[in-house]
Image (tube, rainbow, N blue to C red):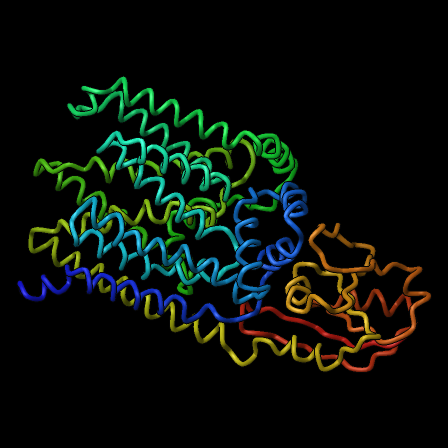
Length: 493
C-alpha cells in the first residue's frame, strides 16, 4: 500500500493523469456542427476588432472572450476546430492548476484529486468543446480564488497583482464572473477584518491598504465597460428569454457541473450526494477540531452567487440559467478534492473510493456517448447536400436564424439571404446575409433558390403562396448533434 501511495502521489503520476484526462475530454471536440450561440460567436469574431466591440456591446455579455478568440484565430486560422480548441485550453488549464498551484498550496493528494475531478466532470467536455466563454470564465475565476487564498497566507504584492488581473479577466468574460469576483473581494475583506489569524492581525493595516488599492485598480479596470454594462442591463430588464421555473432556475444551476449527457434530473441526484457529503465532512471536521475555513469560503462564493442571482430572478427579472453557474466549477470542486484527500476513517475512505468510482464512471460514460453523437454519420449531411446543389447563381434563403445561422457560419462564402416574411424577427448584426429577400426582390428574381426551413415549413408555404415558385427537390435531414432538423427545399423561379 505504501508503494502504491508513493506512485499515486508522485509528480510523474499527476502529469500522466492530466495528459490522459486532457486526451479524454479532447476526444469529442473535433467536429464542425454548430448551434445558434456558437454561430453567433463565429459570426462575431469574423469581424474586425472595432466591430467586435461595437456589435458585442449590443449583446448581453462582455467581450474579452471574443477579442481573445479573434487573436487566437488570427494566429492559428479561421476554423471551427480552432475555435473549439480555444475553449478546451482553459478546461485543461484548470486541471493543470491542480499540479501547478493546488499541489503546492496543499498536499499532493489534494492537487491530484482536483486535477482528476476537474477533468472527469461531465461539464468539461460539454463546455470545453463549446465555442463560448464559459471555460475561460471558470478558469479565470478559479485562479482568482487561488490568489485570494494566497493573499490570506502571504501579503505579497505579487499575489495582490495576480488577484487583480485575473479578477478583471473573470469580470470581462461574463457577468456571473463579475458577481463572483465581487463576492471574492467582499469575503477577502471580511477575512482581513475579522480573522483570528495573528499574522494578518499584526499587519492588518498593510493588508487593508493593499486591499483598497487592489479594489480601486479593479474598479478602474472595469470602468471603460461600465456604461455598456448599464446599457445591457436596461436591455435585459425590458425583456429576456430566460424562463423562471423550479427545475431550470433552482435545481439545474446547482447541478450543472455534473450535467452532461445524463440529463438534469440524474445530475441533480449526483449533486445532492456531493452537497450532503460536504455537510457531513464539515460537521465531522468541526467535531474533531479540524478547520473548514478554506472550504467554507469556497462554498460561500458558489452559494452566494447562486442565491443572489436566484433572488434577482425572482424579484426583478429572470437571469438565472444553469450554464451561467459553470463559472464557479473550480471553486465548487476544490472542497471535494480537499475532503477526499483528508479521509482518515474507514467510513470516510469507503465514501471517498465510492465517489472517485462514480466520477470515473460518469466521465467514461459521458465521453463515450458524446463521441458517438458528435461524430455520428448523420452530422454534416445537410452541409454536403447544400454543397452538391449550390452554384454561383444560387441564393440560399432562410427565415429561422436560430436554425440556419449554424449553416451560414459553416459556409460563410455562400450567398445567404434572409426572408422577410410576415412573422420575421429582427436579424442581428452578425448575420452573414448580404440581401434581405422582400417582396420586390422576389418579384424580380429569376433563378435557383435553396430554402432552409424548419419543422412546419412555414417559410416554404408562405413563399409558395405569394410567388410563382417551382419545387425541384425537397429533403428533410435530421442530424444527431442536438437533434437538429433541416428542411432543405430546392426551388426555381
